[in-house]
Figure 1 (tube, one colour):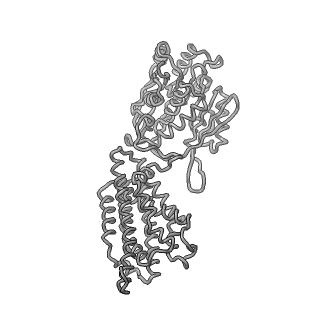
Figure 2 (cartoon, rainbow, N blue to C red):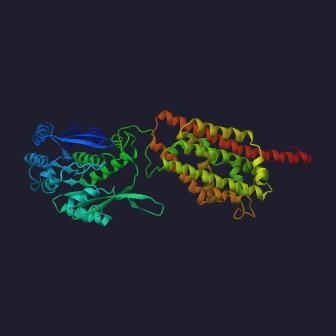
Figure 3 (cartoon, rainbow, N blue to C red):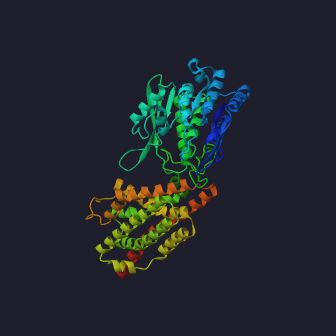
Length: 535
C-alpha cells in the first residue's frame, strides 16, 4: 500500500508560500502523496500579488478527471477557484465522480474548502459575482469549511468587524453551517484575545458541527510574527491530509491547527515581506525542540544541562549558602559585594552591546530592561557598603581583583566580538544562576535564626535575589534568550559553541565565589597571625 493521496484544486503562488505550492509541501509533511489541478497562475512574492491569470474551466475539469481516473484521491482540498465558471466546473466534475452532496458525495470525497476570496495583501482573488456561486454551489459540497474571521463575515454577509467575541464566532459558524456545510472550522487568528493581566494573548479556533449543533474550541498562544503567508492554504491542506490518513474531522482540525502553529513558530525570513511558514518543520531535524508546555525554555535547559557538574557546583556553592546561614565572615561578604559592584558595571555594558546588536525593537527594549535592573542591583550594593562605612566614592575606587578582571574581560570580549546570541549567552549564567540560588535559599530558609536581618546581616541580600523583582528579571532574561534563538535558528555546531561560552561563564562565576571564600580565609589567617596563633 502506498501513502494516502490528496488532491489540491487551487491556484499557483510563484513565491512558493501559498497555493498549490504550500498544499503540496503540507501533504508531503503529513506523509501523503499530493496531486494538483491548477485553476490560475499568479505573479506574487512576499510583498503581494502582482497579477493573476486563470486556467480555462474545461482544463481545470480535465486535470481533476485525469488525476482521479488514475491516482484517485483519499481527500480533496480546494483553494483559489478564480471565477464562477471554474467553481461550477469543479463541483460538476466531483459530483460525476462521487455523487451530489445530498447523496453523500462530500463525505466520500472528503472535500475541504478554503474559501479564498482576498489575499492577505488585499488583492481580490475571486470576483464578487462568483461569491454567490461559491455560497450556493460549493459550500454544500464541503465536508469541512476553513474560513478565517474576515472570510466568514464576508460569506454570511456581515459587515467587516462584526465578529468581536467567541460568541460571535459561534453564531457566524452556525449560519455558515445552515448553508449546507457539514463542519465549519472558524480560525481566530485575526482576533487575538487577552488572557491574564500580563498582556498575554491567545488565539481561539472554533469547530462547529452543523448536524449535532455542537461547538468545540481550541486555544493556542498568539504568535505576533511576520511570517504568516499561506497559513490559510496550509491549514486546509493539513486538514485534508489528516482526513486522507483516516482521522475524524475533530482530530484532523486539532492536528492541523497544531501543525500550523509550529510552522509559524519555526519560520525563518524569506523575501522582504510577509514570508512563508516552515512547512517542513516535522521533517527537519531540529537542533533543539520548540518551546512547549513540557519545556518552555529548551535553549536554557540545554545550556544548563551541558554544564553538568559545573552548574551544580555554581548554584550550590558554599559562599551563598554561608550567607543564608549567617556564617560567612564580614571580610568575605565585603570582598564579594565590592567586586560584584565592578562586575555589574561591565555586565550592564555587555547587555547594552546586546541592544546595539539587534534591529528588533522588542529585543532591544528587553536588553534595556536588563540594564535598568543591573543599575538597581548596583545601587543595592552601594547601600550595603554604606551600611559598613564604605562610601560610594570608596567603592568606586576599589581595584578589580584578578578573578574579576578575568571574568569581566571574557564577558566583554565575547559580547563585542560575537553576535546577539553570544552576548545573550555569556551573560546568562550570572542572571539565571543568581535567580536559582535566591529562589532556593529563600524557599528552604536554611541555617539558624535567619528570619531577620538583626540575627543574620546577610539575609537581606538573599531575599533580594529571591524577590519578585529579581525573579521577574530572570524570567525576562530567559524569554529574551529563547526568543533570540527562535528568530535565528542555528546549526548543531553553533549550538555547541554557545554551550561552551555558557560553561566558561559558569566556571568564572564559580571562581568569583571561590575568591570571596578565599578572601575570608586570608582575613582569618591574618587575624590569627596578629594574635600569635598558629595558622
